[in-house]
Structure formats: C-alpha cells, structure tokens
Length: 246
Image (tube, rainbow, N blue to C red):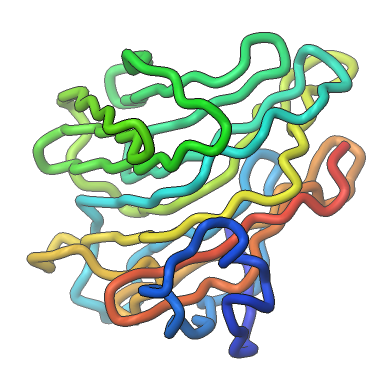
C-alpha cells in the first residue's frame, strides 16, 4: 500500500473540483509520503502507519467521503471494484460488481463478519464512510438522500494502520478477476485519529507516516494509482485514477 509525490499541486490541476470538492478544500497542498510507491495486487490509495519515535502507535478512527461513480460497462461478470475506509480489522466498503451492482458493507475481519447496510446508493450520490474502532461502530451515510446507518461490532479495537483505498479482488483461476473501470474516484474529508489524539486529523498529518499504493493488475500493468495526497489544516483529499485497467 505505498507511493510518493512531492510537487505542490493545485486541486483544479488534478481534477478534484470536478469530483465534487468544495471551496473548503481549496487551500489543500500536496503532502510528501514517507516512501516510494508500493505496487499491490489488490489496492490503490493512502495508508497511515506509525513512524519511528512518534507518539501515535495505533489508530482508532478513519473517515472519507466521495461521489458514487457511474457504473461503467463490464467486460466480464467478475469485474469488480471497492471504495473503502479501514482501520485495523474494521472496513466500511462500497462494492460494485459487474454482476450485482452497488452494495454497502461493514466488515469485521477479527470475527469474520460481513454485514450489508440497509440502503443502496445510486451514481451521483455523495457517500461518507466512518469507522470508530474504539466503540466498534461502522457508519455509512448517503449525504445526498439523508440516509445513515451504523453497525456496531466488537473484537477489533485500534489498529496499526488506517487508510482510504480502492480495492479489487485478484480472484483465482483463469482469467483472474479484473478491476472495474471507473476512470476516476475523488476522495475528500479524509481524516484519521491516532491513539494519543482527541480529535480526527488529516490523513496526511505529520503525526504518522503515509504510504502510497498503486494497484497492479493481472497483466502486470498499473490499473489504478492515486494522485497527490492534498492536505490542509483539517482534512486531506486525493483522486484515484484508472491508468490502464485490465
């Protein structure tokens, strides 16, 4: 899960305003990640991890919001892509598969539980995903339609990482599962809270290291990669771009 960008980039230059970013994020500047890009078979985005000598040693909260993209045409029924936030063993996910369309899930890997939220978003809706690992609460909110639901889980607690990702299951057999082509998904209001903090901080905070991941698909090409992580006083934002989806 890792990647690096160093240049200061205006939001408009990378298309985030077009992805639904408001003027509150207009002052965001690029954040340098802690190391080079990590190629992954399953994920693209940014992940907060503790840094040597830092006071934050684990993470207890994560959130982000994004606009649900239009459903693209599918090449095969196994095409899939998930937008998610996670902390420790908790994950809240918006999944889209070629065969079944959109669904919202609260996942707790510590007790191997996957629960489906009671509403389904539509393309163009703004979705906010939140996890509070201290209380075990996983929350999905459709800001466009005024719908919200919280699933309360137990068994995980704080984790050693927290982040915002696009993920794809590489599948098995032949052909391997490929990532559904959304062209671009813009994440905003990305925040994380460490175990020593009393309020959420920008995902790009200097209180921890940030790793950048690019999703490298079954053909060996990079399918999805994040643009610069832009960070202001209260929030971070970035867009995941589909480069050459398999």
